[in-house]
Length: 405
Image (tube, rainbow, N blue to C red; front, top):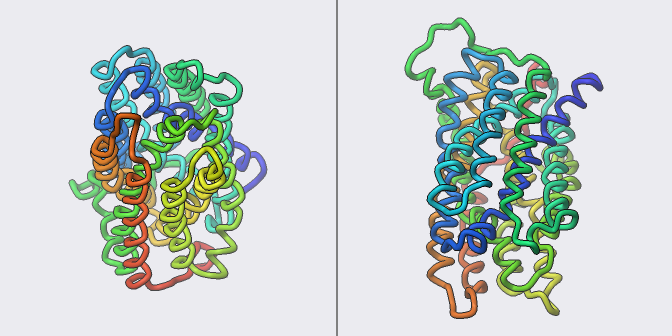
């Protein structure tokens, strides 16, 4: 990649994750305090991400791989999404809020695969180049958290509805910017289209590979405990008395920047299996630290748990995206990225958000919640998934286009 393209892709990633980071972390707190919803409703609201992820592969397979350039589709989706996010932030009750956030997430989730496809299309060796571009998405998420927690102080002022308005502005900006990104034409344009093609089912052929099938199933399972963090970590930290919880949670993304740079080293030196396993172990450890930490002498446990997010996300999600790109034929790479989005942000988190809401409501107390028990449950589940993965997955090295000549 030349410098211009590198900068273009980095700005794209920054805005893509800045808009998500503005409202997603604090949505549970917003719903629980400003809209007075219960944990079950919070779980339902976070499930919209999963519904969007489940639909995403069909949009990718039908449109991005066959009919329209990825950057143009990205622009249209973000412009429409800006309006929906604005309306969600302007809602005064959950009944009004929910339809807008559901439609928004159906619009947003396919764009995660689109930005990856646009980036991968410009790279000769994604295993080396992708992490350096993707880390700007992490920086975008950090910037959003810092603005909300330390600059605007919306959390303390009970003004979290404003986070959706800020996200709307970022969505509109990326929507316009997308039309100036490098062209990423549909790789299967002009080819005969079948129902299998329209639904993106070609990517399901990846599951014939035993190792990839195990990775796919592991992705579904490990995202069940991950949903606990996304939906209730901010509410938990606020409830136990941590000041500027949203800003402090940004340190998790700051750690992402560091660990993102270690991914190429880990993949080449230790292979895919160890890289993924370290990510899953960090998930289990983080929840143990949350279970037994507090804002007194145990505050270090809460901060270490937050900092572990970098390992959790980078070593599993980013490595998994690179693994998927290496396995997929160039003609189905957009659909393949949609497939792994379905597994992680879709099926796994759909189950996880629902279960998390039920468990948090079940362990509600007169003074708040029994957080120790709540966090031990996903910790144990993550550890079990890790054990099964270690016993069944065979290590392998990531193959690149340059390796294939």
